[in-house]
Image (cartoon, rainbow, N blue to C red; front, side):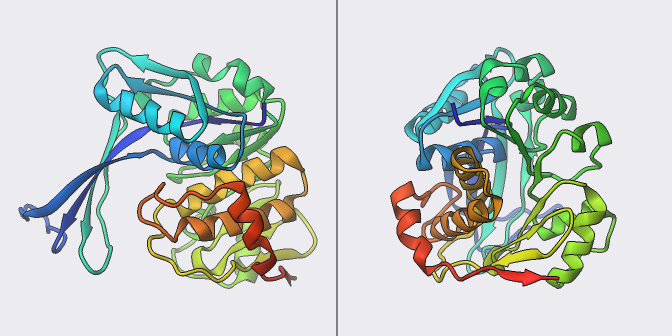
Length: 307
């Protein structure tokens, strides 16, 4: 068994609008599309697209939306045997108006069954046996902590949505993977784009373990506890939609680490996978397979040392 994911499953409703509404304003949408989502499920789907042995641990409602989420993960090669149906509670959902032209959006999330995922649910065989455990913060924090305690393999945490991390959790994390905005929030710093050197300083102030900061079109920054950091630029691709690229990065990082604990090589692989994921629409519209990622790796630029 290679990768287990403990986290959220949502049904996204994407609404195309000419412009985003203001407070108290009604606008007419052009179209509405259902799509599978949730950070946990998105990461699991990305990992499943890249290789076998991926297990999802989570909760959905006993409703048609839950069935759709389970079917979507199964199509991505993910084992959903530990995704529990929760009677009387709806599957988690997100309503996302997306503005034509700019791609700007608003997101309203209703956790639904995700809020019912318990520490006991997380102490499961797929978690205990996985070489890599992927975690996020869209399910209760005590459940995230219980999963990290149960793990015997490498624990990778995406601190999203950002919130204060208790030391009893950070002490169990082997690799932290924030984006630069989440890193600033964790460090109590003002938002804004920063230089790689500044990000290194912030990362080392937050946790004692290695930190991989995802930087969108700039790639990713690997910050070890000491020594030089590495800025890994992405390969050239024609991006269509960057939605879900960070989740694809995490799923790819987990699959790479399950095969080989070399973290710089895993970051290089994940940057290539995330770049490919932007070449199609939606969070899962262009999830790559392993063959496509390996074909792109020769075009990934060399990593740059950041002192």
